[in-house]
Length: 110
Image 1 (cartoon, helix red, strand yellow):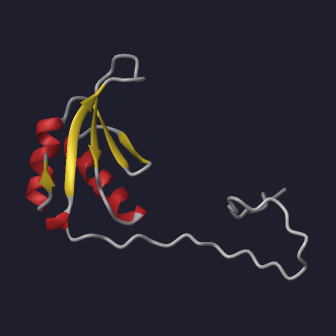
Image 2 (cartoon, rainbow, N blue to C red):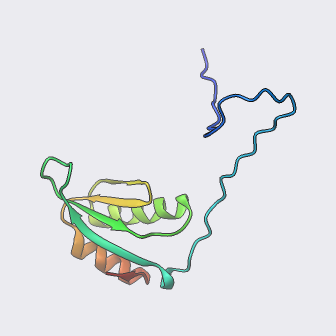
């Protein structure tokens, strides 16, 4: 049996209006030029059983752009990681490598 695709309709539970037309307000965020992006790179251990991860915070842009940047960083560092909630997570203490790679791409890094 095939799964039915469900549209995400946050905030709409039920409407008694027969002419109701749900409109999705999800708008794609425009990418800010690389030279204007101010990113923060930090090491985090919270809620990770003592294991270190490198976090990249402050990226402003589309979901596909942040995923591409995350994939680039993970590939260059040779480790795993993820992209969630506008944060790039790279496994291990890779802070120096990540800062160097981001500066080479033209980002402003703290």
